[in-house]
Image (cartoon, rainbow, N blue to C red):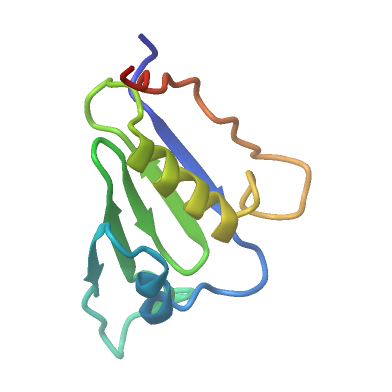
Length: 118
């Protein structure tokens, strides 16, 4: 078995519309998380900290306007639904680094797929 799966993907220029992205995950459990704001706070992109959490069988995706975190709490083979979630997230977040500059690249950890019955 591989180690627990944690992987981060990015968008560079166009933020993801969190209200619309929920529609792209039919059949998955989705939840929008809106974090509190304060007019006096000084924070870059304070309006970009909200997330949509999408859950498959063993895989969870935390989607923000510019970053996706894929997480598997327990070390288990990915199910067909987990693979579907992973592929959909990769479609929206096509980059493995937070910027176009040539540093801070992340590589996807290895994982196993569930064997189909039959």
